[in-house]
Length: 117
Image 1 (cartoon, one colour):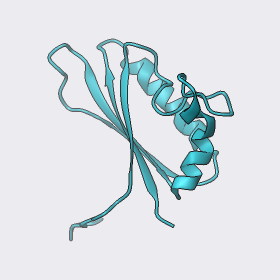
Image 2 (tube, helix red, strand yellow; image 1 turned 30 degrees about the vertical axis):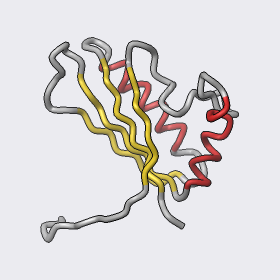
Image 3 (cartoon, rainbow, N blue to C red; image 1 turned 180 degrees about the vertical axis):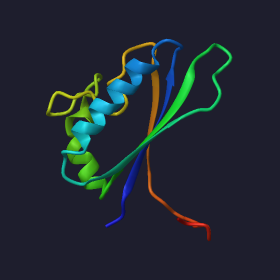
């Protein structure tokens, strides 16, 4: 079974950072209760965009594409991206003007350094 990483780039206008972080926390709490959830990591850019917005990267790792699809399920089939639990998935759980660019990836190469703690 090959893990799948869902990687979302999230652009958050200045002043909406706490809202975006709270929404992400709520979704990870939901995802972590679903079968096949492995982990999630959240990154914030060190620099702001020229307009004051800040970018985040959110990753959620699933045991398989099938586990991911079970959580997303009906979200593929409607404009709101709403799954069977009534959750907006596929990056659609954030209000405008927050923008999300979702994608699903598998690892094809990984290099680990000698300085692992």
